[in-house]
Image 1: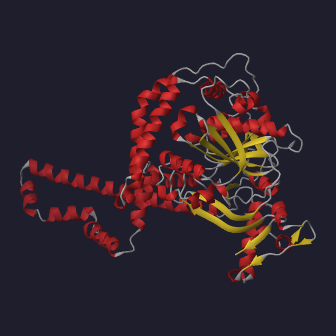
Image 2: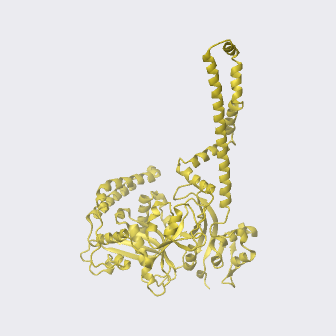
Image 3: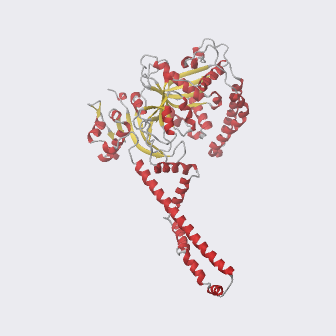
Length: 571
């Protein structure tokens, strides 16, 4: 057996970080590992357990304990039912390529002009201006959008034209009908479209397109779009190609690929995908923002569905039936489009069975997280704690976030400033308010005597009012004190419940205490029941107990089948 027949990974353990969706601090919880090499079969099994890769880094979100649960979503490609809107996207794209569209052409030309101006401004920057690169890029992009809004609005609002007559209804034929390599009658076409499937690789053209996309769409500074970061993110892949030398577009085998979109021989989009034994998995998609009017993201999704259908019809790809769209987050508006591809399914995070999307959607309307086969609501205090994590970062003026802020101030009395504020409060409120009122009466003996002797009714009324006010102040202060104590108690209870729940095994995982000594031995030493394999451990893991904990957690996260087939490289 060769080393390439195995997967070699290094576990990193659980990671708590800020959330890229709701921007909360410490709201995202994942388990991660680095894959040095990985078979496509093993990665297929991993994504069927909720894993996903970014370059060579593989991670599995803890859905129950994270602020924005990320459910794996897939659809059965051969049963794809295109909606009217999805058909229109393909039709207008084909019409644009074959016949042209004045509104689209004007929009693209205006955006290109704005992009050239932005690039010119960027190249003219001095070194002293480099620090404000992100702000400038954002401003230029916004300016470009504003200047092209009037031009493009007419085209976007215009009702899409219907498909030409006698056009095939099946997706594979329809979506390829605008490629000039597959169509004989191209002499009168306005544009030339070429889509090329190739193993993932670095080119200057791809990197330039990626940089433009990241800067204009995600407002990243150029410094974060260097060739090395681009390569680590979208070029490097741990997947072992099944056809490293004899691949073709018609028979690519399994591995990591780029599907490149060329319009008039200009690269306008790249779809990063993994072709696996059971699916095509979408990794990332970036495009030229100048061509956003063409709805390239939604078009490319249908293109990838058609790729699944095409491969599934060929010998050797009979099991390749699904299109994986990555993660679906119910509360993220940008991911709504994923649920519009039917029929689709979400992965149950506890049973790892696939559940119909519509059923899952109904459950998620009422609760943040759920195991779809056996839905059970979580503790309301745990949900309140998750909400407070989100609210604190977003600055939401919810009751829970205000309560937490009050309690934070009260709990933060460790320093001199904290104790000073308490001392000041003691000077004012140590004595009972009734005692202050009694003093006031004692100091007014003369006034009381005047009253007894038939003094002024006004003075009597004044003293009564003062006494009543004192009682009201006393009652208000007692209520405020009780309310603050209740808030603090609630906060402590929320923290206790949060710690208890997050200490539980992640959904669909065993507890490390259930990993027996025999199980550990199998993970460390055996492959395919009796084939010995090594584990490399550096000095940091000389203590067997530390190594055991690392391997036990890894076993619980990847499952028995994968734990007994992949090679651990612990460092």
